Image (cartoon, rainbow, N blue to C red; front, top):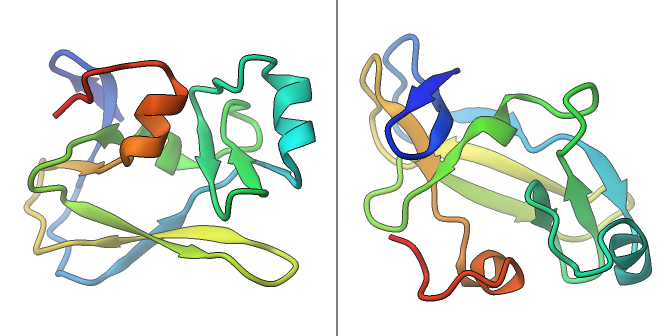
Length: 127
């Protein structure tokens, strides 16, 4: 984790990583309903919220409960990482894999998706 120009802090590769490599899961507190989400964030805007299936969310705001995924920044074009959601079962999850070969020092970024930006009230959507 180190500064990312114009974005605060970001997550960077310390070694080369081949394409399609599992990196880590998005970790945090599991919110099992929209009601739980709105109890915590009355406006529905949690900056570290990952929507897994529309009714379940992972809140990575607490550094004690979250992992390194919370440091990944957004990039719509040419993301270095892709998210794969496990939407069913008792423990929904968001898994991250490399989208292509990653070089040492390259920032790990993924597309947060339109729903995230709309929920945060940020329009037009950032690149």
